[in-house]
Length: 290
Image (cartoon, rainbow, N blue to C red; front, side):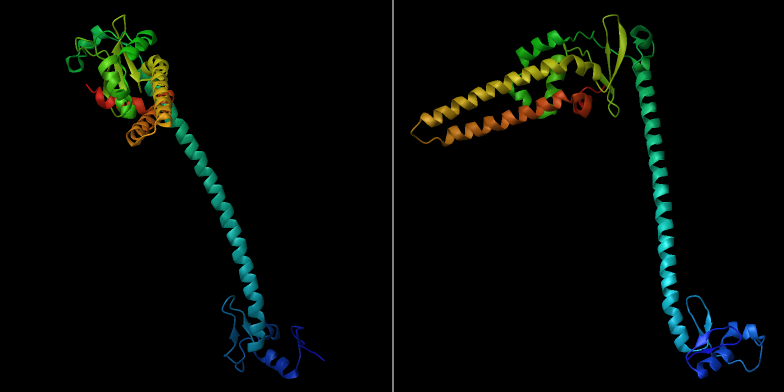
């Protein structure tokens, strides 16, 4: 059996609960027109979440369970909105980053283009603060190959790209009379300069022009040295196999050869990628400052 409130039509299980409801529930009292009646009991049961008032503690408890669920659902929906907003903001930031990178690339290209514009040496030398004294740049792929064949030894490969930069300075970029044909005038940006056969001062950013001339013969010469290492390595291994005595010294020598052979292979890889990894330009810039 249920008891229905004649004012708000809500059902109750007992007549006592119905009377308590009609006496205390504000929304029902409002319907009754008794909201300000002096007989209203003030110790109502109020929901902390939505501040709704109930006549009994049980009805409040029943309500809170539903109200919490609604609150969780609301928080879930808000989280979805926040995640959507966050994703949208991240996408906008990524677009801005891409745009900034494009602007930086355009600026670098423009700067490199400006730096690579040739300047006549005679005009440049009129400025006493920027006087440049360089012999004519005479490097070709052919004469580089000859210098490498005559001058480059195993020892030049022991210290990687730094060792090769030392070799380049001493044997490729300096004449026998001590005159330089190539110098760095901005270490931070690796800007080099040389004078061509027409007496025009050329700027070589990150040593790209120089690298394009010397890369192929350098790689070939390193491969020749590696091949020599391989032959010696195989020869010593055969000697060990044929010997019936203490081979510790020979094994140490083989280990040393194998180590230097691997270092030479690493340098060959770096030389092949010298324009991409910029290692050569960085090492050379510290050795050819003005």
